[in-house]
Amino acid sequence: MLDPDGDTYLYLQISEIIRSRIVQGLSPGDPVASEADIQREFGVARTTARRAIRVLRDEGLVHTVHGEGTYVGAHAEAPRAPRKTPLYQCIAQDIAGHINAGKIQPRRPIPGETALVQRYDVARETIRRAMALLREQGWIYTVPQRGSYVSPPERWPSARPFDGEPPQARLPQEHRENPVETASVPPPHPTVQNGRHPEAS
Image (cartoon, rainbow, N blue to C red; front, side):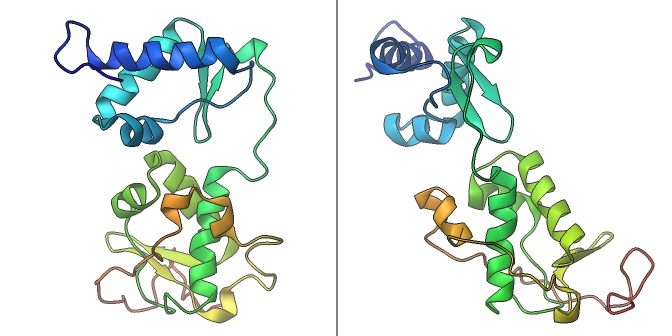
């Protein structure tokens, strides 16, 4: 329980709580609470959560893998089972699922980078990797100074966007509640896509 009126900073109180949890029952390689988890559990700002994690990282108790999470132990000494699917791929598959289901129509804009960062509660780089994957697979195309738009269906990959469980099932619960909403931006003329018409072969 935090003591907001005490003489110890909140981030130090939080780091001490997590430290106790690590000592009492976690093993090297086990995941620890993310910044978002800390925010929800303790009702603090993201900067406070980030400072609490940094204290533990500086002490060598945890290490952070960019785009995945924070784990017990120093990076070299904490063998870690890899994620079944990297987070950026889960996000790309989730968006592709909405496109495939018709929730975002061809040549309509998808939400911008900032909106997706807030929607999935991840780092900006994670969203950029997800968008790059969607472009590579043919789900979307980007118009300079305008944004990213859903490609015509004939450019979509022939295979399903994911195998096995649906991508939303791999995302944290808070990311499954609402579908990705389209942005209220008029579509561009579909002749610009890296200098090629998006329907060109």
